[in-house]
Length: 401
Image 1 (cartoon, rainbow, N blue to C red):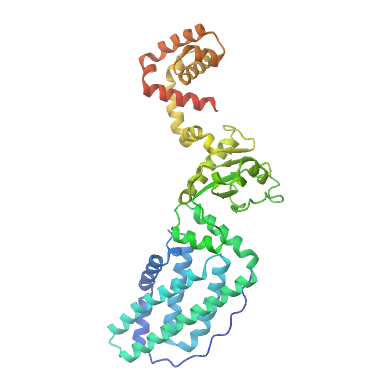
Image 2 (tube, rainbow, N blue to C red):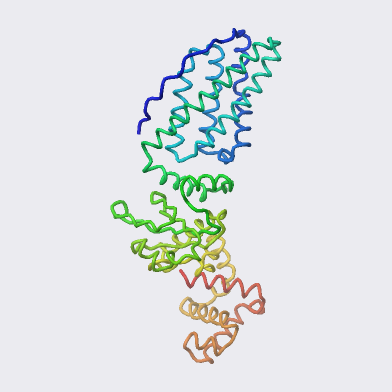
């Protein structure tokens, strides 16, 4: 959507004569000043305090562009005012379109402008410029900052008027991105964006991911009330607020909302750990799609935590299984499976022969015969806690393949 044409910049005001050496010095220092201004903005404005990313690249570009305008404005105030107004009007428009708050943008503008003036004013004093000239430059700087803020507010306001129906969903997508990012967003940023998106911040959340299909683009699932949704992500996901305390998020309601698609509900976690719930849910969905976990309806990670733990590092699991089950390689393959089955049942049954026989539906004497064979293969190691744990993990993993 193209932004509307910003209002014309107001008329100019008399500029103090500026020595060329000051403008030259300021241009030489522009990159160094930009570094310090960017650092100050990230330190004081929480929304810009995220690690490297698209927002930080835009911040850097904006700082360098703003400082360049500022220096050009000092050199010729009347020539740059319209460009400054147009640029900041567009920045205000883009801030609204991205679902970000005007307050954070204007805070960054104010903090950056003050820091830039402090550094540039010090340069003017180092050159021994007259105090009246320094004062005039300060007035020019703050008038410029004020006009830039007014232009940004005008662009932001018009974007909201033209796009009010899309702004809240965009803010919700922004919020979901903050919550599910690799680095947790500062709580103050989450609160601010959630407020602008009209989303009540919960204490706990869980993430649902679901399989895509050929009809998804034409028939997207309905969005449960109160969720944050990103249907364009891979895999598509929903973030549920307080899932354990809300009946609208029970299995039946979610199954209806997901339109019968295979889906996985990640564990319930504190809000700051939402990315963990997503990570576990994605791992479980991968196991569902591979047939390791059941794929009918909604699968809850909480019901399959041992399988998720076992499959957390599959190469390591395979290595463990190879080492733990190596003695069975001495047995003919036809008999090997029966010994594996007996060994797992015996371990799960607490080394109880009758219980093992009941699990396998064989005679206890058959179990005792097989156990004697296992004793010959594994020796005393079969009765040590570490070996028994390794065997149980390896055999359990094999039983889900």
